[in-house]
Structures are given as C-alpha cells and as structure tokens.
Amino acid sequence: MQRITVTLDPDLVAEVDRTVEQRGYAGRSEAMRDLLRRGLAETRRQCDPDLSCVATFTFVAEAGVRDLGQRLAEVQQRRHDLVIAQVQVPLDHDASLHTLLVRGRVRDILAFADEVATQRGVRHDSLSIIPARIEVGDHCHGPDPHPHEHIRT
Image (cartoon, rainbow, N blue to C red):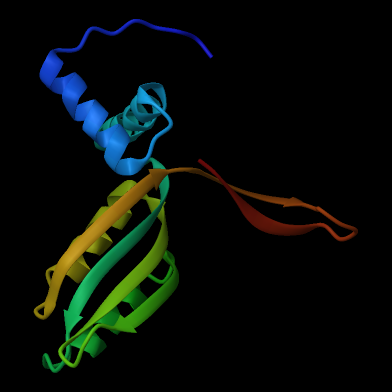
C-alpha cells in the first residue's frame, strides 16, 4: 500500500468519524478506501455507459395492481439476457419485495431498471451497480474444458 496525505475540513472529518463508528470500520483509512472505491465506481459508471457490470435491482410491488405481475414478467422476458436470478418475498398482504440479480452493460441495466421502476404499482426501487469485467472462455478447472463466464470486479 502507498501512503498519501489528504487535507479535510473539520466537518468532513467528523462525518468520516461518524461513518467509521456507524458502519464498524477498523479505522479512518479503511473507511476512506471504501468511500474512494465507491466514488470511483460511480465516476466510471457515469463516464462509460458501455462498462460491464453486475448489479442488484430491488423494488417493492403492490399486490392487486391490475396486470402488474404480467407486465413485470414481460419486461424480464424481453431482457432475459440481463437477469441472472430473482427473489420475491411477501412483505404483507399489500406488497412484496423483489430483488433481481443482473449483469450486462451499465446502459442496458439502467434502461431495464427504469422500465421496471416506472410500471404502475412499483415503488421504492433501488439499484446497486458494481463494475465488472465479464470474460467468457473455453477452459477447464477439472478434466473437461467447457465454456463458462468469469466475472472480475
């Protein structure tokens, strides 16, 4: 690791210290590394919409909204190339929590999330994108080579 010196105003230091305490970081350095990684990832996403990524997209869907289930299924079917897995959990009699694991280009993931989030009956959506290099190759980890993906973050 390399040591660098950064000058921060007292209010920002206090905010970093609160974050260290609240999140349970080992110290300021670990918190700063994590915050820098997040900030740099966000900058890369904004600068390069063709960047490959993996992401979680979570939203709450209201029960009983006309055709919502069918509309959500249609959106996911159209973009089956993005959706890796999904989990649906009932929250109460009126709503369920949906989490979709997706991978692809940032621009495609953002468009997909917008299409789902703007459906009537969907509320409280959240998208978390992690930049990743998706490599597909024909190689083996055992006796038989076969094509499969590796995702590098």
